[in-house]
Length: 83
Image 1 (spheres, rainbow, N blue to C red):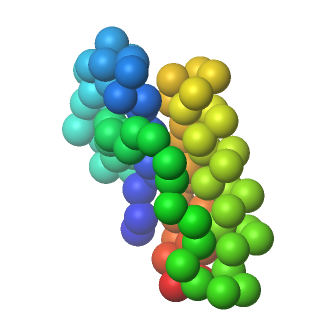
Image 2 (image 1 turned 180 degrees about the vertical axis):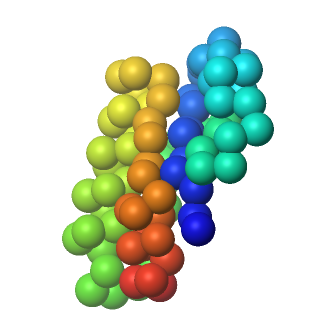
């Protein structure tokens, strides 16, 4: 099973440490630090852009405003299946 993904902004290392401590070794959630800065690449696959682009924009906005974003296991599995 694909774990949920808890993404923390590179600008919020305090949240990253807190998430790691709180989640610990949970197998159903993976904590990652988003190290992307600057312009994001666009969709590389024609026809896939609408859904993927919308989801990416939502995640980017959450990272900017809240410092973190959660991608459910179901969303990750669906995204992997579309690739």
